[in-house]
Image (cartoon, rainbow over all chains, first blue to last red):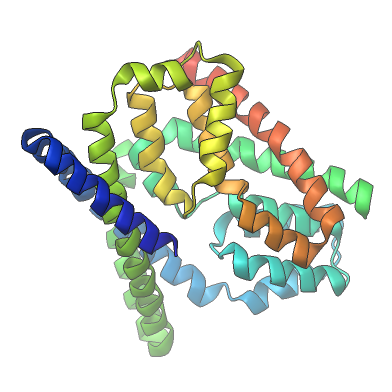
Length: 159
Length: 168
């Protein structure tokens, strides 16, 4: 759905641009191409790491760890898991929901879900490519810390 | 020291690791490559239109427009703009990086771009609905209520750290 929308949008705007100015369109496509080429290595790196993670860090393993009640260590572990794995939200929420019903702690699940979306260790090579090492490091680190704070507050309120 | 951790070397390392896995377990090595291939296809279906859009954005959208809407003097309106753009846009986070950097290059403030990125990553209407369905309204609602102020603070600290160093 997203993919189709964005291809159509890009196609329409490109056609409009071509209609208005050939030179500007050529310049924009050159920018696009340079951009695309610079992404080759980070993308290769990212997908390869994903291959490793999906092979060795199965949903069953994640469920096993998150399902145990390990107190604050469980919350930190869940946050770490959420930071390194890459699961689509549409798989992660049902998984998190079933773990919660099976008795996993609220703070662990909240930490997992929050770092899952906010912290991206795997996509870091791509983020570095655009924003630099410093930005990437601090954005992810701060997001991790705040995810833990969110998790602790939620554990206290709902747990 | 810095030159050791380049993308190229890391890729070589991954290649080596894959070969080692292959020696011990053929199936796992194939699984690694298969998963990587699946993600490559997914990324290749998203990135081309994104880079085309960014090229068009760079050429057609005047700097003043972005500066006025999301620049350092845009105030609360700029933050709301960043939140709005981040919420309504669909797609994976890696699609937001190129958009974020082109906003930055066009004069949006670092703070607003950081807000945009974090919101894009964590607050999406369909995602919230999904979370309510599977984790309940209490859980999803409280998490959302805590996430938004967290994003503002993350972006604030991030800007503070980076502006001091003037690295970006």
